Length: 227
Length: 227
DNA sequence: ATTTTCGTAATGTGATCACATATCTCATAT
DNA sequence: ATATGAGATATGTGATCACATTACGAAAAT
Image (cartoon, rainbow over all chains, first blue to last red; front, top):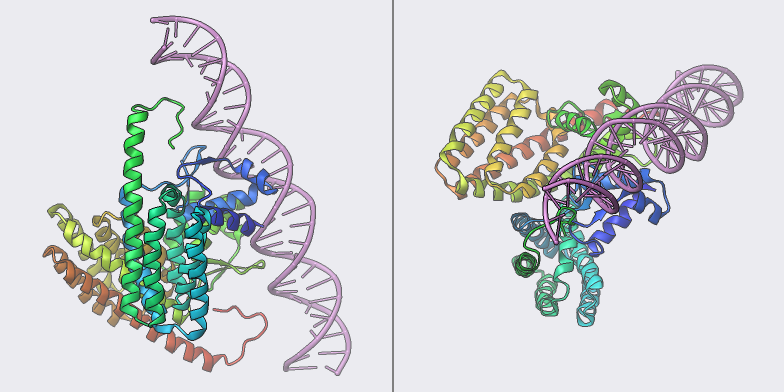
């Protein structure tokens, strides 16, 4: 049942149901999930190991939040790893995979048109995951999913930007085309574009948010919640 | 105190003090470390999340072991990630770092000459870690260290191969030279060589071990320990 | 009105216990 | 001698409890 809690939290993270820095308590989560605190503790330790949550040393548990430098690191690592997976996927792709990837692309387009951010986030990860599974390199995919876990909460902030969703769909279209053409270099390039675009958009949004916050709340009071 | 247990196990893993597939029990570890089973459980769950241990679903806990395909994945991921870190390290390197890296190189050479495998493994990771810290990309370094955790136990098998140790030192010499020259492409190439060489050697040793095992013990009895 | 201080409530941590289940051992049958 | 089966042991899991520490909030002093 620890796994059940783990899945729930992991899925919630990727779907953007947690805000960066949001505070949680083990007991509340346990009650919400109808279990004892113990499985929640173990699941949280596991997610802490993956960097998704932070046990702030002292009686404080919160959703992890990434600074600018960390976002840059994640972006670089994703470009390296997902680029590799995209190449392999293009090389190993068979006609059976074509339909599934096309179908996922369609669902992604639908979510983008409906501007349903949670659905878009979820489908986006499913789209990429399905592609990378074709590469048949589960260890690398695991590392990549760990990074997704970290940026999941951040992407909620990008949500309201409908323009980014459509721009992102262009990159996804290029990924799809490259895969259907079995063009490995093009697949890597398209995935790189997608990641870089998302990172740029996120960086812009965070900058703006930081500015607004510094104007609205120039100094922090004692009991202020970090986010 | 969970962290204490975690560090102990993690260090032991990297130093090659655990054999792939080796079976463990929570209670034994707790007794050996002088704590209750609880911290051990949490530390193990954390290490399971990183793939270092396997909770075989059912009352079975063992050190993770990698098959050939997984070793290939880890190799590819390491080339991608550590190559990136090596480039950044060469770019950001200052004269202060030169001495430290040189010193670590000296200790590595000493361990190689003494054919002290545990010391060599440990110093090898310290050498690479120190270099990658210069890259100032802790998220990427974290992912890389996770991979080290997985291959740590495997490298014990390579231990007896003194020839590999000296060959590996040539690659390390090239890494050192590239860094001192602030030559990013050369640093990446040298690190790639190092990783590929180690992977090849490991692959050879595992092939040979598999063959010997299939000859020596053609069929497995009921109570046999997998390794 | 702001800052400081102190008391209370809450939270993570560790320990112990009970339980379901798989594993191991030994006896038995072939 | 080997294979099979049943009893006993051991192991991971979950729950509950006690505790140290910390964060929170109200009250008081400036």
